[in-house]
Image 1 (cartoon, rainbow, N blue to C red):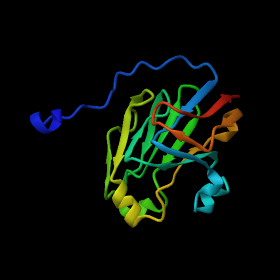
Image 2: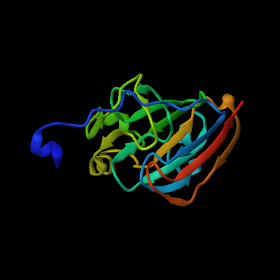
Image 3: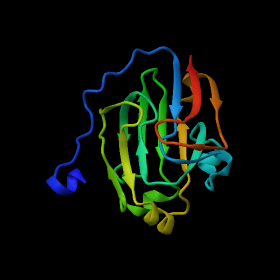
Image 4: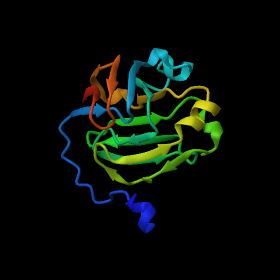
Length: 175
């Protein structure tokens, strides 16, 4: 409403104070929806953990928020995926939908850029859920730990409803 009335948009946080590394990361759901095992992702690259272990969420809304305190290490040019690094050095890929790279950015808007510091719940990307449902293979959103060699333990909390930026979906300790 404020944006509509005054033509201004809230800028992403760049002055986020990150906590000190303690070797333990709680990964919150980056989207509202149903948390599922990776095996339910209709793409073998994710389902067979070729990119890494993690979970998936079937989104019920079109907003992606930061699941951790960390830094943005990559925003894909098509804005369908974002990579983060936690304060403990764990790298996380959030991949919105399956075969969404083919949309060439249609329906996606990024609110962060490489180097942005983020806290849990900070808005990263918005996407048009109807466009993704219609034009992509699937809406399911994998959340992958891409540097699994840095992980000592990983606990996953699947088969639950999740609220973006609030519900823990994975807890891990780093080596």
